[in-house]
Length: 203
Image (cartoon, rainbow, N blue to C red; front, side, top):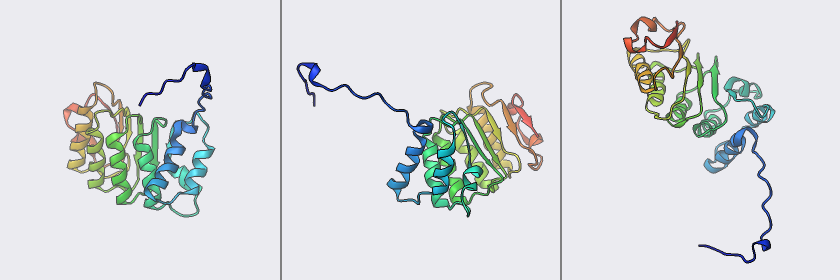
């Protein structure tokens, strides 16, 4: 449908666009809660509303500090969905904060699509060996993955996880994944294949 208005002066000028806070992330989170009927977390909203406009690091444990109880998986689901197509945050930090299986699977789906995150910390987040492998496989399958730094310290990686990590490194453009931290990870470093040798491994 095409509508022509003559003369053009009859059309009122559009007001200038007002940028949404944090690149629209807050609005996306609120909208996804409403669309999927998931609980809206005042704690998460409080954390997001206090971030400076230019803050590009999202720290899950800091969001949880605004709550008097651990965030439920249903509350975290909407966050994962918002992060999936997030165009603002480029660093995700989940350190010393235990996630359940359902949330970790939601996070894997986030990693399968997100093209903005460049630094990811998944340290002591409660992921099992299979869940770690699933997360890494999701990142390896993301053709738009932009991750340059990955912290997997204090997680569980078996041979399946190591293979998924190697696949991730191989799937990234040359020298994109510059640093991988695997401290306290059951001797992962010696088990990494030669193709990972060009990446800085912090054991």
